[in-house]
Length: 185
Image (tube, one colour):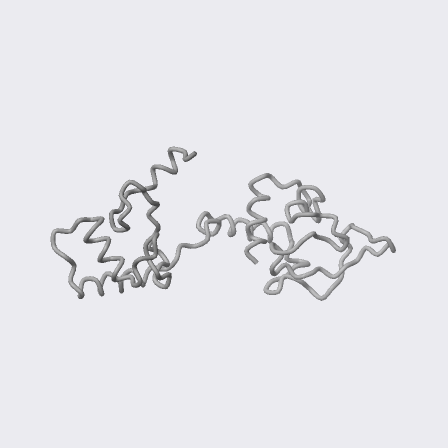
């Protein structure tokens, strides 16, 4: 079942010869090197897709000239892709700021997000060792479980369940922002 919000972002565009089967209209941002174009992949070049859009979907009175198509395609090719959504919302920036405020960089110093020292992290192993060298946080969002003994199944658990190295409990917003920053590394 499609909710009303999902329906609202779909249109019949005529250029794919499937009127009656509305499709989502994608952004042109970052589309320069994504051939073939159109949902059915029928436009091998950006100029061909622009021609179909102008002629069929927008039903232009006059067919576009090759010069116009080349100019429009050149313009579209300059459009950079949109930033990751967390970056656009400032979540990563707030997480980076929180990373500093929590003094995480004392042990996980940029640019490699580690240090050569060992630290008592408050978690001992079966031999009684409590000091460990911090692993790099680069790629931390793509690995787990966490800690030397795998006691945290997820990155979120490091802070929500085990509350490692925190002087206060993180709010839901702080946790979201910090996790977004860590996953961006």
